[in-house]
Length: 240
Image (cartoon, rainbow, N blue to C red; front, side):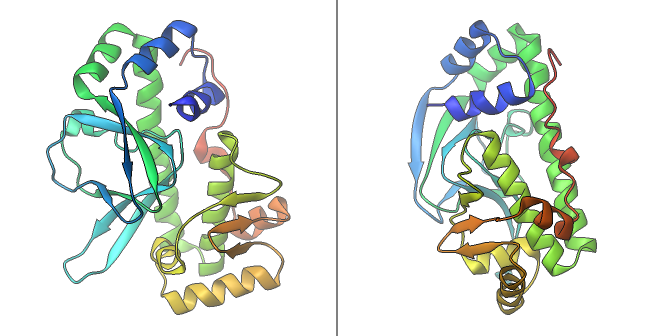
């Protein structure tokens, strides 16, 4: 059920068999959501956190006039709302961008894990810090990068994060989002997003069609995107 989650943790740290058993035991059930469903609603009191098992999910803020901003994407293996353990409600929605499956971790079980296993406490603290690092990079893209660079950067980030959990195949990965959603993630209009995608395609950097992304030459895309993966903290550290 949570194999991708364990794969993601083990890519950056050592997780013992005992710790794996503890993590697996913390999951109470699986729930499924359809594309466009709100998984966790802003300001909703919650007593559980969710691990994305399959699909692509996002954090999203909605404005009263109907505009909306995506602030992070989540891939299988991610805790989408671990910070709700201390906050008790979110200041944004968690939404399913396609059909998704989530593992539910009740906060009372999570509390026992964190109280009894200090190493896992540090591992999950690292996870919330990583989310913050991703948010900062998205903020930099929205504020300072060109439309072409910010779109290429998003595709590069997703390539690396999905590759970490074994979901990239020969430079190709699934990203089941609409062009309108892509535009909102990049802070540009759908028309501008379409033109930017055409630019990326013409230069041979990125192909995006039917929810599938292909990056033929990652190094070239990385250069155009000004992509430095150090903010994803990919180094494997023993016992944080």
